[in-house]
Image (cartoon, rainbow, N blue to C red; front, side, top):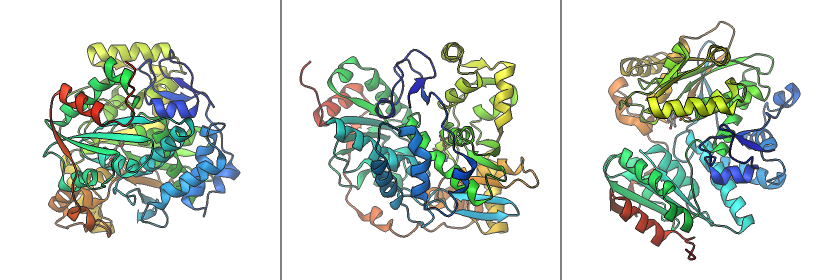
Length: 468
Ligand SMILES: *Cc1c(COP(=O)(O)O)cnc(C)c1O
């Protein structure tokens, strides 16, 4: 299978190259040139299978010809063996026809583990076969960094540099990044904000000197391999509730549009789905786009669901490409408009296509708190703020006879303060995390200064090219 860029002028690449590239070199995002199809019989066959087996079967067509069957099977087994729940992604009923899909049983208690655990193994495998080494850069406001460190710690062919704003992540989040003891992980506490961290990573990616001397890539949610790993749980959850006979609706707490786009991929592969519900917090660019057809950036507001506090939603470009009939010239034009004016309008035909598959809505902070309190009171299930947004917005689109699944994207203990304030309950930390708060921390404090960062990078990366 080949992958093409949404902007149409980067070379088509195979899976392994797309995995290591992240972003396409024309600034676009990679998508498969065709959508593999799974028959109703194959889909029904996922019922009762171990999660890792379904993962292999869903992912296999996307890596065909590049990763051997047995290797993919082994990596799926290893990645999902790190989860603490036997079902990996268990469904919990919270009302008649209403369910939550618990995606927080991985090593860092957030759904990002589903993608990151597999991504790390895939990258290490491809690099080992090519006898190459790579440097990963990530800026984090907390969650992505922890999931990346947990997944990449100890991988032989990868150095990970993760930048976080000093004093602005929770002690739990910081310790997830600083206590692995792994020599290939570099946790950098930046004297600045998350935006400073992001700007430093971006500048390093754009630095010709760095690019000449280091093979660098990113692990953010535009990496195709992260999307593909997330397609799996849409299949396993839908099948458990009667698919492919019955269409299922999913409500997805959304920021960068990676998770809900994975649901769209499942649909394109043959899984019958009712609406995919895009649930946002007050940073509601996507809910507004669905309502008005205009994609328009505004400032970012800090909320109790920080992993959804975004200004632009990168993966939306993939949907735009599909909705415009894969017309890369149109995508290029709209993205250029976004760059110059901060907005663009979607034409009526692609907008209608998007509304065919997606519905959307926003929940503000009052509604999020009320939903946390009401859900635990009425059902016993204690949602974190991100999950509460999925539940609240999902409820508005309930259709009789169609099961509705809200994705539970983080464990409530990860956002304990907000959960406590809304519900009066203290979510207990699951077993096995006590070591985190007592382990030895290794981190380096650096100034919010490009020069210090790049010097550090060049003197600590294991794969500096000496010929200049
Ligand atoms: C990243 C994240 C989201 C948003 O997912 P996207 O793929 O960016 O839309 C939602 N909830 C939690 C807890 C997250 O960490």
